[in-house]
Length: 177
Image (cartoon, rainbow, N blue to C red; front, side, top):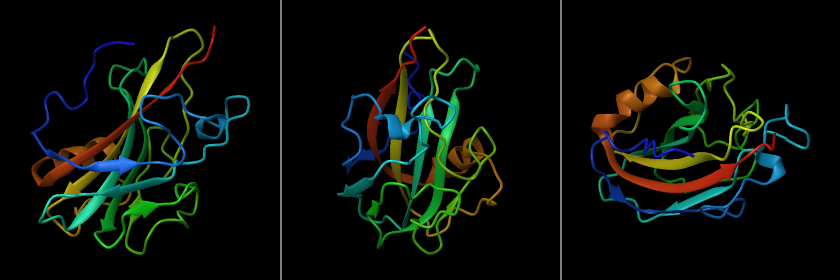
């Protein structure tokens, strides 16, 4: 693991709470949250619930990012935009191919595998532990205004000036050599 902090150069944001029945902060992903390309992996997105978002929040976005991927730019596993403020939970599996567990108006962006869905962990064998930042972003706009086919990196760039708060869980994964 390296010291790459994905928030180091982003604007400060208030913190609020995110919890999960699927993952404990700092713990390893369960096999269901690994990629289907890994034995036992099922590409099932985690359950998330959040509370305490800053006043003025008008929508949420959720992202899952691995800064430890050997790409030079990390790896985006999931990005969801335009979650209404009336929604403070996503069920396990909401990030499937259809997005059937997402609220009306919310949409999934293509991840770094170019699939508009959650793709699970798949660190290269022997590469060491990877961190997966599961983030709920509280935004000051109802709609972030990015196309549904844009990248999670562009979503992040567009959100940077609209983030009021950030709630973070970190999961880990490692594939033995």
